[in-house]
Image (cartoon, rainbow, N blue to C red):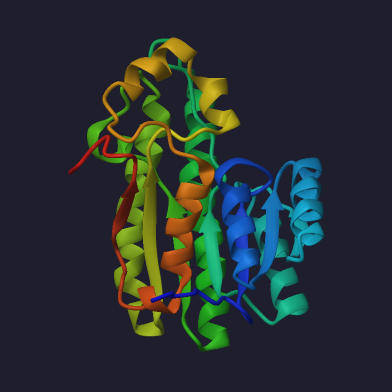
Length: 253
């Protein structure tokens, strides 16, 4: 038996989708028929992603957004309402990590990581829910979390871990708040995933050491994207407030 997930007629906004996991989710959603808004601070990266997606028959457009700026977020969602009638799916994939050692971590960097990873999810989710309520046909909110929310980071990254722990609590609380609107709110917790962010923020020897504890090894962005596809689907209409571990068995909680 073959089950196909069809997102035709759905509008999906994905922050941080110029590359990495966000871009993989954007590709998967366009293949399922969704209209995707590739929202990113890096306009060049977003444009490259959109060109690739549209070249493969998808429906995508790019939009510049700073998720830490409420005015910028408002412009993004106002555009989606004006151009597409609203938003059905929102994925918070914009993210930033920090230094390994808390004694090297400055307050400015701590705030920057929490602003992007946690406050950005709050600002965007709030506008997404407002649009979904107005649209009147439910919706999906998906946050990209991390196993560090449950076990702590293995090599420092205290601001990152704190932001991801906050994201889980935020998602569970929001899920209770908007359930009456038929809006589900879930978190995907990827393990070590083969993205530029991973290699930029961790030395290879550290990644190799961590991978020794992960039965299925390093994930690909497409692995995470398939989980995001399920959570966006009609089949997940009764799934809310969960953290979906896609970590190769690294945590097994």
